Image (cartoon, rainbow over all chains, first blue to last red):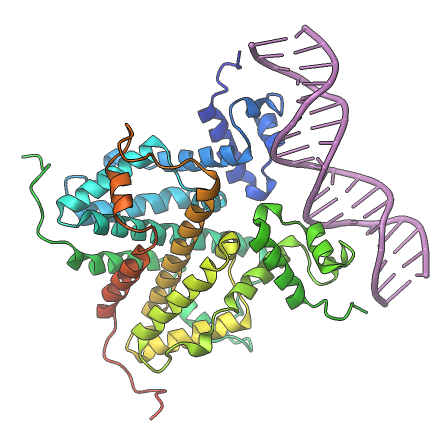
Length: 212
Length: 212
DNA sequence: ACCTGAACACCGTTCAAGT
DNA sequence: ACCTGAACACCGTTCAAGT
């Protein structure tokens, strides 16, 4: 029988730890087995292949979002904003794993349930089902794009060439503007703009499905 | 001397072709040498390592954007919108390479020049330098996030499990809404919302640097 | 000085051999 | 029936040996 404690969830958690610690490039199925203290091939009893492990890692990251803590009763904008920040936060907590998350669709029951709940909030607020989906996708893409960009810059800062110092010959308007703002304060602006721009899409709110 | 025609640009183009054809997972330095008809190690005379090749692939994709065709004289919104669509288009032309592009900062002179020009358009329109940078970053992140999501879904559709058919037990609101809209018509909505939401950020346009 | 390819230290995955 | 680990077909990269 499978070793006690060697579940899909435990394996995924170990894989995420390894990626967090050493980066995706240093991850291997063999090291995963070693970390778990089992035969290197034992993981194949629970996962079809490496892709399957990465899918589970993405799910594990999603599961860190405390979806129950979202302001589900406070309207579409509060839900959208808080969800976006929550997603960003769990992604930035795992900079080495953001690309893994961003390059596969998460299809776990928890993520489907959250998606459904969000669509319901949006339609209750007066969005058509189609617009509800468009808005939720756009928010998700902005958030993931942002987290990926930030993680890339932060990780790259450890190993890649720096932008020129002030006064260097190719110091330019772009670098100047980049210095004028902290590296990661633009998500607040971008997200607010997106939400502002979506506000005119919805009609009058419906009372269907509202708690009294 | 290096074989005639074996330049960094030629190698990067061959690498992009290989990735386009077979996906990033099937790419290798050895296959790249074989495709070029040279010793497998010859590429190391022009690139430090595989990462360096991937950086050049990202630059090659960026270079496909016809930045000269952008409406530079038509105001910030026209520039922002057309640039975002142009970036999306070149990314979606290379679905297997989107993740490679999205996970590294492009630092080529062409991309820096375009970034500077965009900031200049924004500031001329009355954005502060800081807001100009925030807006351009948010647009870029939305666009890359969108392209990555779409490429992931399209590539995944070839190999992964389908969402349930209508009538199946777990068919749900999310799948229903997903059916109600085509897979990729939400970028127009998301981008328009972002631009609408940014419109209030800028002050009155400046005449500095304007052509008469 | 430049180029080549053998060699090293790894991979993911399969599957014959054990129990 | 289940588990193990040897073996296969690869990798990226280095570097000694050639020219």
